[in-house]
Amino acid sequence: MTTLIYLHGFLSSPLSQKAQETTAWMAEQGLAAHYLCPTIPMEPTAASAMLTDLLAPLHGDFCLVGSSLGGFFATWAVEQFGGRAVLINPAVRPYTLINQYLGEQENYQTGEIHFIDASFADKLCQLEARPSDLSRYWLLAQTGDEVLDYRDAVDWYAGCQQTILPGGDHGFIGYSEWLAPIWAFATATHLKSSE
Image (tube, rainbow, N blue to C red; front, side):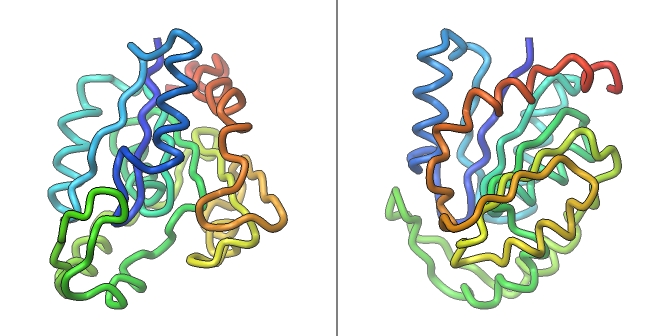
């Protein structure tokens, strides 16, 4: 059975609201055994190594739910290992934004301090991936995202399934209402036949 994997965003963690809502929904559906919510390392090379170790053994039978920078990593991972991805207000070209965060940064949930240096931009740039099989992706974005311009994601994921909702914010208001459709996308048989 498909494994659903939630990938949190920059300076976030599995304690984020969307991660917790996903965890609770999967448990309520009796699907906790088919769900993972790892802590993504802050350093991009470490993040890609962790995702490689996590995803390679799944042989493409997974769906990533990537929020913000997690969406960027999800796209890279699908292009490397197959599977599918639901992208929630994803970061597009995060290497152009990372310099705003140079120096010490505090994780929003855990309080852990991370040091962001100039090498992060180059490392993120090396992980950039364009969607090749458009049927593997679903973009969920809200026009009121105050952190990222949703139009960048609309352009980057052109041709993919897209749901663009007016208003909202970067945290994606009403996310929990989308969990059943996300699981349906994750387990859709027409996608599995192309893998």
